Figure 1: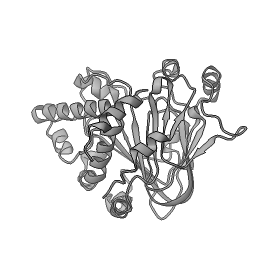
Figure 2 (figure 1 turned 180 degrees about the vertical axis):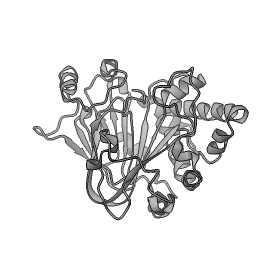
Figure 3 (figure 1 turned 45 degrees about the horizontal axis):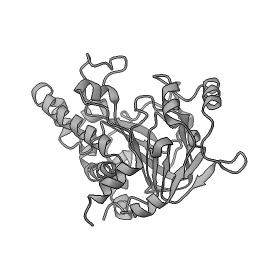
Figure 4 (figure 1 turned 90 degrees about the horizontal axis):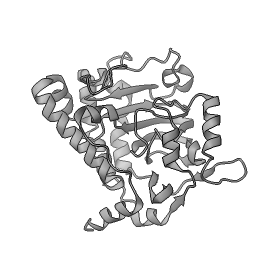
Length: 330
């Protein structure tokens, strides 16, 4: 098995309630909230106090599989340490190392400009090349993200090396999409509808997109591979507050934590961990100390769903997941 079926009944017994009013918080966020403006964050923190109680000023540290609930039993976060089986890590690691699929470093995002996402200070040199690669079969160019603008294939997925990489990542991408079908069935259905509409549109209008979609076996529209990178606390404004971005980690490293400041919690972020939450809603960051770390980050772009005419799905609530699980025959 490539995906450990961590007993969902066990996870559902480990429910961590939070006191944050997620609906009010989401309405208080601006359209392009970055999470790096300290004055702005201080105002948000005053309006929306931290949710889960730690000890003193120390955030709670979680290391066991669990879900974190918001108001109305909405599921704010899924934490699945060790969810990826060891065989898939052994198989995937060579695929994730940049030297195996890039003829040069030209496709690694520049680490010399002023954006924290590409700033050199957040990359650590190790046995695995450091960098951030982004892939999408349909994305809008910056400043052209309304329904009037036609999306195109990302630069990373336009090359033969990028297409080969996407082909090699078919198995983990499909497995993680399958996990989303349980964690958030409405979002999975919306992603599947978007995938089908993109396929139909590209057959008539874009051979390049049709080619890129051939081995794109995930319902997400975007996939990033980050290698040996830390991230400051931030928001991801392109997502939606009631959607799940999905993070999966591999390689060999230790002393790594995913900080979710909005919930006042730290998640032990060891290899083979899968975490699902809204990067738009929860301010988060990663601190990694030793070893080589690779993270696959899957997300959906609302502007692409809007362009395709895909309705926004409802938030995911505890009882809906339980109802879906009851339909599965063991």
